[in-house]
Image 1: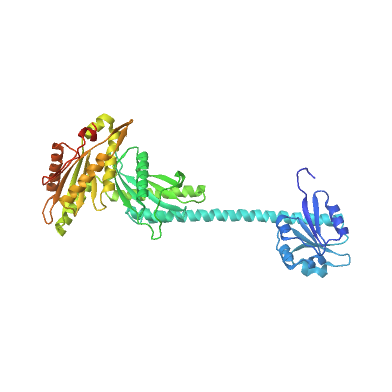
Image 2 (image 1 turned 180 degrees about the horizontal axis):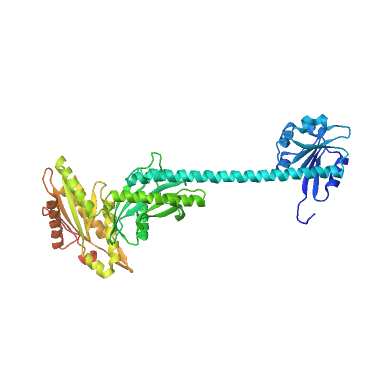
Length: 499
């Protein structure tokens, strides 16, 4: 026997000592015989752990086996069973037994030739079975691969057909999220698209999952804008946020715990990058090579559909958010102001407008640099967003100037709110290279009384004149269009401002 090779097992059930010795002698050193005398039997553990080549079975020993053990051996496909007959017994007497899966029968005395013939036949059968099993496994593998390819073709066909059903990006992305669930488990799908061309100030449209908490919405907005700027190679100047529909049982999307949970896929059409999709995947098995190929193929189909949707909506995205401060931009403000004026005239409610300007902002840029100036603008935008009501409308009007629409708000309440904003901004602390500094703002307030037929231009002029008055009177104060002045506290102006 070759060193290191384990001997092959042969079992006996009910073999007498003489028969067992004859079998062991005929087999030689490459085999080991394990025999259970009549009255004992292999256990389930024996059957589970061993794979004997042949089981030599004496009829009396076979009959003495418990029914469950006998059934287990009958259903065992690996070993070949051989019936051992006494010298006076005939094979014809056991034809019924042999039909129950026995390879053959041999009669005593068990000579070397008889035993070796049995082993030879068992090996032939085992080799044949091994070939059949191997071919079966190959056929099953081919069937599985064919089934997977068929599923992937059906998946791609579904993606392509559903993506072509609509020119609405929300519908396309809602369908894509549902379809991609067939390929990998998803918590959510979000996207960002921007206009292509030579413009330096990119405008983007973000598509976010619905019903997210404020922290999650802010996180995903920042993530999409960062990835969009990275792929586009230019900063996003302004953006508009839209929300997908979502299934009724779809849980709100949270903040991912690890970067590997995200798959960022750039979108290209006509040789140009115009957007990206972010897949927030749930935990699961890694994608196979064919699944990865299907994913990228499906994204190419989606890119064409989404590009067509963008062209259908006049290519250029109507952005309504400022890319720096994350609040609304001037275009969105102009549209909202018209709507609010119409609502004011229809329902005869009061309405106010705040115009806010950061004092000496040029000095901040000159002294600390434009990056610090950008940080100041973002912080002012944050204070406005955090302080005002959800019904109020805040926008960056241009440069260091902000505007706030206050529906159903009289002048006195508007002045008090403006004073509160002025105080909060004055209290905000900034640091540059270890040097602390503060800023102040001047605010002009204009109010339309119920029923007054005031035009957009007139309201803006009133608020602008009130702001100019606040600047003229020394800054860091609130002035109303009707002449009211709310001055800052007695702290020196130099301590509240920088530059």
